[in-house]
Length: 468
Image (tube, rainbow, N blue to C red; front, side, top):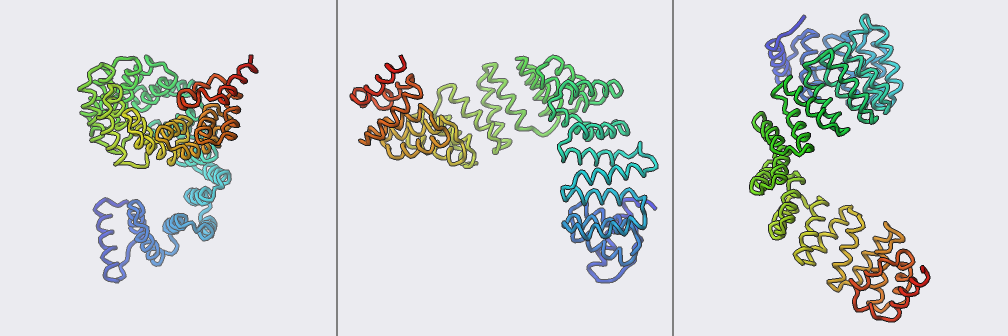
């Protein structure tokens, strides 16, 4: 028996009315199945459990209701109980595909993916029409994905396409596997074969364009996206990708046109606005560039690429005050973004706001940016601020990440001589010149007061003589 939407709504209304009044009303098993399905689809697990319980009380032999019970047990990670019911169901209906699917699901949830595949292949084996079992093929493909067996996954996702050429989920999974295996040529070959049979499939043209883009065949990528658009002139993704190709071809006006089409077709996206801004910047149309870059952060204040783009826009034009204004706004919105703090430090350094710059580098390090230049820039600013002990501590931490680094050793040598710890100064300076004598300019640049000190001159001179 099939139920219309009105029937389902009526059943739901009766069921929820029954829960409120504690009256016991009768529902046939199909009604219970529709009610349970509705609650599971909407994430109302507790109501689904109530419906299953009442359903099994009225229809204790219903296999479908028992399968829903298994589904709930799997959600709750009660695998043993689920398996017990599945074993009972297998005895009742050994040819019920859904029993095998749920058994495989239990195994999959327990990371027993190879056993799950065995069960699913058994389900395919007992099927009256295995050529129609697209869902089963997809499940096998997904289990192979869990095992990182991408070649095997491709085989089963291709079977899905053979059954249903409009199964775009399977098509995406096939290309995902080829991408993971770095098999662009194979992906292109497969997509071209698919398009020979399905020439108006915009999804396949879109995927083909992306493959050509990945191997930098931009003219072919452009043509593929054109065909995607011909197949569906409202396909926003194709216009976006075509815009990216046109940027690579330095056809910025055409790229802007494609990005603007996406703004007209759908809600504006921060990505499209950002790319338009970059294109106008390439065309040296600064007013339009900054207008769209600002629209980017208005659309999505959490998009770090937008704030970074605006800040760098002003930095390129040496307008560090405005750059600082925008990077400050970014930091205030997301104080855990390491890219913001690194740029915040750079802008403040250009403005000679040394304490603020030091704070920016310190936060960058605290947030995990352990690049060598971050350690060195912070160290140099601490030296400029006269914070020699702090600079030494910073460099000793850096040395844990970059042992035997000449730039660190020169700085440590200079710092220890500066604070009159000459033995340590001699040790690190000798290390430094031994690693790379060409970096000795660091001493004259950062510690000019040491340049004429005899011990410093002697260490550098001895090293030069030795190397000669």
